Length: 391
Image 1 (cartoon, rainbow, N blue to C red):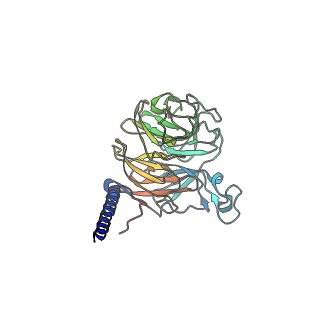
Image 2: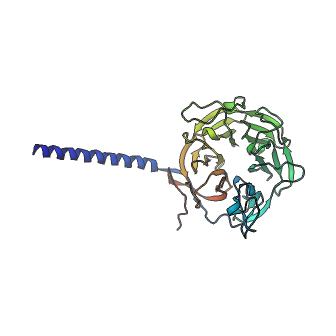
């Protein structure tokens, strides 16, 4: 009996330990799923509407919104289309498909209302266009991250060429005041008439230029220090953070309260500066992410205080909703995949006046998506795919 009793006691203890482990696991899961107050979004699977002319998108590497909530995107077309399945490069061999023009404009209902772009007289179209941004006058700015793309282009709302800042085919030089180094994106402080250049895929800096003349007014590297062109090798999550940006510097977004948020993409970090380049703060997001990195692009909520920061993570395929001032992640949504609300290399992000989010996807994603703003609500910390809830 003693032996049997010992066995029964042992089994009881094992069961209690197992139950405790299950309980602990459930507590941890509950903690992860604990609801927070944050902006809530639902993907709109019917937006945008189909394009005419059998047009399709190549790698879609920029999105911007104008003063009337028209959404502009830029994509790479033939050079990124698969010849066998998408008629890329070799021309159409069946009824489908044709590459759409590089720059497309959609109205708030998702209708394609204009299209233009490509090589023309008086300017050097980028060898690999990258980023599209709309200033307060509804002018359209683009950069380029291909070989020889050491310049910026500025067009009117309808595609009339206005200016080229910098000459094409200039060498890498993060201290240059006359050229750039494969620009990822341009953002604006319209009141100061300044554009913030994430410069970028060859240079390692933020450059601030006059929006009329293109003159470089100031620039800086990581921590506000002088940028260097030294190749620091690949990111190692187990090594101390380096004191310079890695390529690409992928965004530089000014705020209403005088700060600039910079995407140091391969280092998995956001660095925050004053507009004069003085370093303020930094945070790493998903710091074990290698390769393409986690900090791809930033947009802000449209309230006056810009309380929320939306971060696109094209490696981990999600959007983070963050408290802008504390850089705390409140919640995240998205997942890897092809269905609405999922992502394949979510690359760029923008918001409209109603608070809706628009995203584009590069590589094989080749897509524009809309996420409708549903107000601040109680949401889990990890939402998954933000599918419409229905009635």
